[in-house]
Amino acid sequence: MRKPIQRVMVYVDGSEPSITGARYAICLAAFSHAELIVCYIVNTTAVDELLRARIFLRDEQVEYEHDMEADAERYLNYVSDLAARKGVTIIRSKSSGSVHKEIVEAVKKYGVDILVVGELSQIRSRRDAFYDEVERAIRMTPCSVLIVKDEDRVSEIYESLP
Image 1 (cartoon, one colour):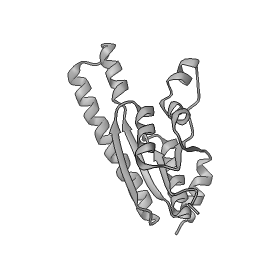
Image 2: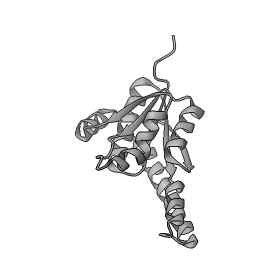
Image 3: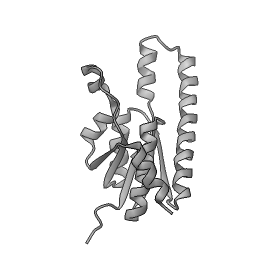
Image 4: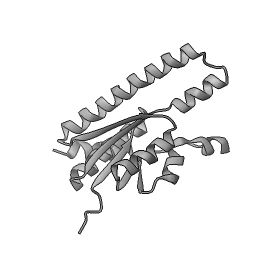
């Protein structure tokens, strides 16, 4: 019989909810003896839109994308350290483009059984709901999705891991 959870993927974007999601994914991977894929997407689509809207110049776009690449490495390293403290090894996945499309592609590429995301941001308008990249990924991904809430409980579970 196949285990229900063999591969867990967590999407990290540097926000506090995504780090909470990462801690929970580490716990889930540890308890289920699953592979853990940590996914960070550099949102170049949003930067391209800023360039088209003439908010950025081409030089500013290149500099901003370079900064986003550095952020990606920093957060992947941070989650890698969190996982290593609990004896969990990770597979790092970094790509760039449209966040929801890249998440769906990574889920397919790695054969993910469950996608873990941090709590979604508050929706302030219909436009926010339509353009929330993580919510779009949740709707489009072919696997089950776990939305992590309750940061205090997650911290307690994470700290209880040996």
